[in-house]
Image 1 (cartoon, rainbow, N blue to C red):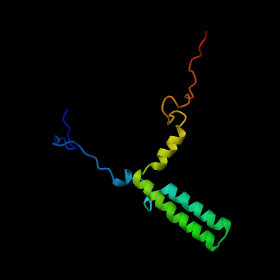
Image 2: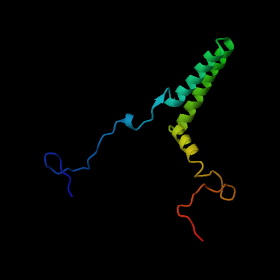
Image 3: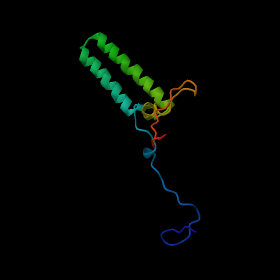
Image 4: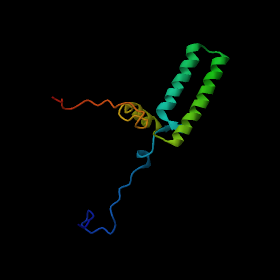
Length: 117
C-alpha cells in the first residue's frame, strides 16, 4: 500500500517522526542519577546537623559528599539505569537465583492445581 501525504500525493520516503532527546536520556543531577544524588545529600546533611557542627563532622560530611558523588558518577557512566536495575534485581531475586543449578535453592513455586492421589 502506498503512503500518501496530507495533500494526497505519494511519499517517496518512509515517514519519520522526530523524538526529542530529552525523552530518551536519563534524568541526571551533576552527572549522576538524580535520586541517588539527593539521597547522598540528605545523608550528608543529616550527618552534619544530627551530630553537631564541628570540624570533624564537617570534614567527614564533605569527604562523604565528594567521594560519594564521585562514585555515583562512575556508576552512572557505567550504566545510567543502575538504580532501576538494582531495585529490579532485589525484587526478583527469589525467582531468579544468582547461583549455578546444583548450588541454588529451590524456587518458591506454588502448585496451581492441587494434586489428588
